[in-house]
Length: 43
Image 1 (cartoon, rainbow, N blue to C red):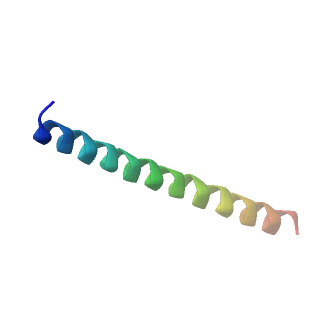
Image 2 (tube, one colour; image 1 turned 60 degrees about the vertical axis):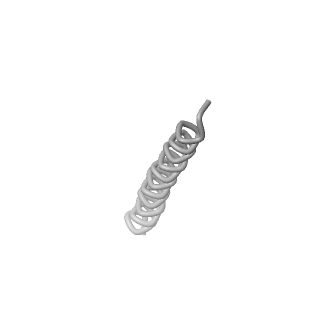
C-alpha cells in the first residue's frame, strides 16, 4: 500500500461524503417544501 494510493482513497471517500451530503440536503429541502405546500393547500 503506497502513500499515493492511500491519499487517492481518502480523497475519493471525502468526495463521496460531499455528494451524499448534497443529496441529503436536496431531499431535506424537497421535504420542507412539500410540508409547507401541504399546509398552504389545507388552509
